[in-house]
Length: 260
Image 1 (spheres, rainbow, N blue to C red):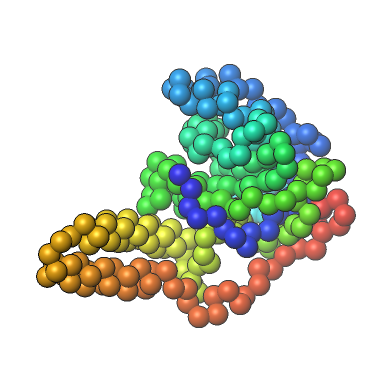
Image 2 (cartoon, rainbow, N blue to C red; image 1 turned 180 degrees about the vertical axis):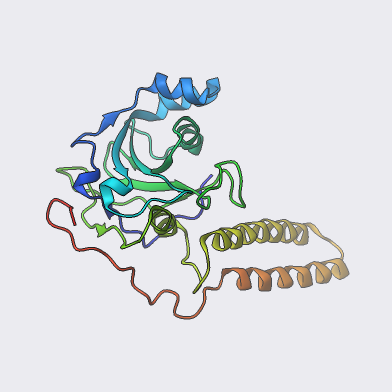
């Protein structure tokens, strides 16, 4: 399952020093199966949807010239090329990859007919993929148009200027979240707030359904009061702090080959 796509996401230009070659390294499917031990249904999804999985970039202290951190040692960028006719990837495949590869992963999904979508698991640095308020969910971008000649998005941003790998992880994940964080809000707090939003939305949908089925007027009035209260709570959890969108993300100028 994914969150609402980040509408204003712009892909990142990864440094040439972090590249594993023009095509990257193919990760054999059987190797992934040995590590993750997926059930037969997930294996069938792989066969139906995935043409190839390639390891494209290794974002690490030695390839980015930034400090390491205890919670995020490296970030691997994986390119997943979908089979013809596949319009979207089942997130159980992403979960299988997260289970098989013991590193933080940033995914780029490519459609055969053109288009790329980026995704990451919704978790704070140091959390496992099965823990946290958004366990099992993925943050993703909208599908972006790609140039016909090299299958890459036409517009890219340089990686944000950060001091260490945890800060880079935070910036990458936040770029894919459906709304910006509040001023001074930590990533764990932001994910907790998004989890609260989702819970309120589910509760609101349940009450609205009950109200539509309810025949007694007095009960309808009572449900309407509860619905209005939930809407107020949802607005409070959703509203960003003033001016939270006004601060630009600092970037490093890059040369034509993407290196700082």
